[in-house]
Structures are given as structure tokens and as C-alpha cells.
Length: 214
Length: 295
Image: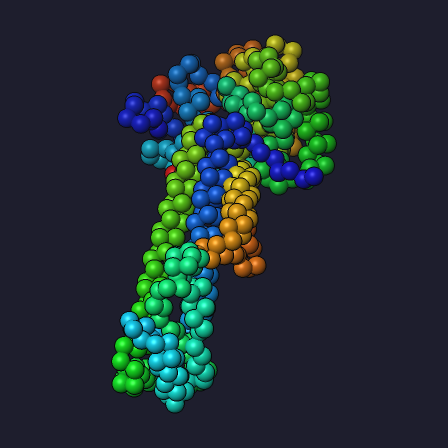
């Protein structure tokens, strides 16, 4: 994979994620972690090779199906990518509204989740008025509200303190236990050590699978 | 009241905010153009209907001719007319009525009485009758040298030509107004797409269909189009009512009555609705076309 005419960022990267698995995606800065995630959440096409998601080659699916597939993927972006014109509540409700959810159910689920991540006092606030850590929690809530089959997180604990980071990891594990496949790109060695999961380690454009405890 | 969720802050875009003004102006122009075309068409139909089924015989007054001799010629002309197959009635206009026709041009002065006025005979045709105009004219000219028969054909031909020209101009103007509106909407929508590119990408990545995103733009465009369109329509119809009121006060025999038919008003009232629909469809197609280029 490369951006435009730039250098190849990922090459010969081959791996498969079993359903309901939990992996950390590690590697030095610039190794291609975010680019790999972009391929996985269908924001970028590979220049060569095949990406298969939910047993479908993503290059062959119709546009409409691509949208349906994206609804099964929850993404936590490194820069959050919240919509500042919407309230915290409406940002988190977005995936449910796009999926055509009922407003009364949306209200219940979103309120519960925002309460769980400790943001029940700022439902109507604009994300722009929140701290970095609070924005990150809103982004996480938006990614998990639809109970995705695949959760991709790019440095999800980068802006929160250790206590909240641990709490968020518990949330991801909880989702994982209910069948969600989780991939978390992180630099946080302590978290990787504490939560004992397999690793996909990227370095110099290639990938290495590291089984926990091996 | 139910309001659809708008995820994109389109109302704040300068290009979108100008849309109601542009649509309002365009609807005003389209309303005035359409009203002009309807009015001219209606008046022409009215004039043409007044002339259909009629002929006019005119007998020029000759210098030194006695009134009695002129009256004899009028009676002869009426006889010739009534003998012509297809003619129902033939009636001479009294000299006073002929003089009254000239009042708007010459004024109501004493000089009018001294002028050698021609005599005019109004000939009405039978509804189903076919008239041999050429034969009628020949017989009339043989009986009364200097008499003329006017079947209004030339005037009607010119009227039809004028009407077609007015209609063509109206069609061209309405088309130009439509093209201008579409162009403005396309640019405003593209501007919105550019300004909100990041947010649109997020909606896409969350799983929004193209229809969902296009829906945000089209509902916004429809609302703004209706708002501007209704304002333009109210202004246009208000102007027409004002002109109609002013025209009825003119009380002039030269100026035709500024009258609209009852069915003209609903036709004019559809202009903002059509404009709003065009704005909505243009925004939708512009967005869908742009989105089709995204992954």
C-alpha cells in the first residue's frame, strides 16, 4: 500500500483475524499501523493484494454493500474525528441514526453508554468544548454504540489517564467477550503487558504475529 | 414538529445562505415572464376571437359626394353582402359611431364633423357558412368603385407571428432562468461538499449510504428553495396585482384591459414549487455524482 506516488508503506502483509479475537497492533511510529487500519475500515484501497472482510473480497463488493459492511466496523480515530456542529449525544447517536434506529431506543442506549464512560454531564455540549480525554471517550462511545463485529482503535488511550485507559480496555474486552473482533493500535507497552492478548507487530512495512506468552 | 436530523452544518455555508435570495430573484423573474406571456396570449386570443367570423366593408367618402349618394352606396353594399352565401348579417355603423372610433386619435373637436368620414359596414358570417371572399370582393368593387373588403387576415397573420415571437422569447427567458438557478445550486452544493468533506467522509465511514448524505443536502436545498421561491412568488404576484390595479384605473380605450383569467393565478403559483423541486433535484444529483467518486 502507498499514498499516491509515495513510498510503499505496507508490503507482503498477510494475516487473518479469527472472529471474536483480540489483538494489539504494535510497532514503532511510521511503521504503518494507521495505514493498516485504514485498509481495514475501508478508507483506502490497497495498490495490490486482497483485503477480505467478513468473508468478502472488499474489491468486489457493490457500493451499497460497502456501506453495510462499514456499519459492522467501529473505528476509534487517533484524532477522534468528531463532528463539532453536533452535540456529544448526537455524535454518539450517529451510527444508530444512520442505521435507521428508533429514536426512543437511541436515546436510552446513548445515555447509558455516555453515563458509563463518565460523560453524562455533557450530553448537549459541543465536542469542541471538551478536553482531549473527554473527546476520546466520546469517540470511543461512537465506535462501540452499534455493537460492531469488528472494532478498530488507533491509539485509543493516548489522551486519557491510566485509570481511564484501563477502564476503556475493560470495555473493549467486554465487547470482545460478546463476539466483537478487536484490534487496538497502541504504543502503550504497559497496557499490552497488563492485558494479555496476541500482538500484530509492524516494522519496516512487514508484519509479525506475536502470540501472547510465546 | 418532526424535524430531520441534519448532521452537516449546511446552514452556515455562505454559498448555501445566498441560495434563497437567488431562487427568490429567479422565481420573481420567471413569474413576471410567464405572466407576460399568458397576458399577451390571452389578449391576442381575445382580439382574434373578436375578429373571427366578421368582415368589414369600408366605403371611402369622395369629395363633393352628397350624403344621400353615400347612403345609397351603403345600401347597395349591404345588398351585395346579404346576397353572398355564408353571410348572416350586414349592418352599417352610424356616422356617429365611426366618428367615435376616431376620438382617441383626433380628439372630440368640431373638426371631426367636417372631415369626410368613410362608412363602415360590419358583416357577420354564418357559423357554418363558407364564404367566397374573392368573389364577394369582386362583386362589391363592381357595384361600388372604391369600396373595400377587409377580412382581417393580414392583421391575424401578423398577430400570430407576434404571438409566436412572444412565446419563444418567454420560453428562452424561462430556460435561461432555470439554467442560471441550476448553475448556482450546483456551485453552492459543490462548495458545501468541499467545506464539509471531512464530515462527509466520517458519515461514509460510519456506514451512511450516499442517499443519506444526499438527503442532508437535498432537504436543506428544498427548504431554502421553497423559502426563496415563495418570497419571489409573493413579490411577483404582488407586482402583477399592483399593475392590474393601475391598468384598470387608466380607463383608456387605447390600452387593453390588464385582465388575468382565473386559471392564470394557480399556474403562476406553481412557479415556486417547480423551482424548489428543481433546486432539490439539482442538489441531490450534484451530491450523488460527487459521492460516486469517493471510495
